[in-house]
Image (cartoon, rainbow, N blue to C red):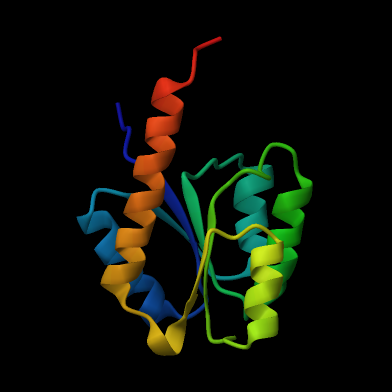
Length: 138
């Protein structure tokens, strides 16, 4: 049985996407990659992927990260998913918009430390697992 936490990595830069996937898998995460916003939403809605967290770029082909985030937040089955933004958009207005849409963290690529990002994902998954472990089963 595979009980590795799954991360949906939505990033159109193949180089960064590969680095993040390697690092996450080294830390015992299963990684599913989407290269654009439409593919990410298809994985979540059509294919029923339920990741432990989503790493979401904002500047994406087809549908941008804000559109993906808004769609996720309007879907009762997805609205509670933890989302971490990784983007070149570092303006305070972009960061505020992300936070208003409930992201748990916002990393600007120019200042991105892959190790810091992976550690943040690990913290989130660990705290999430503690919450579900103590929740009464129905």
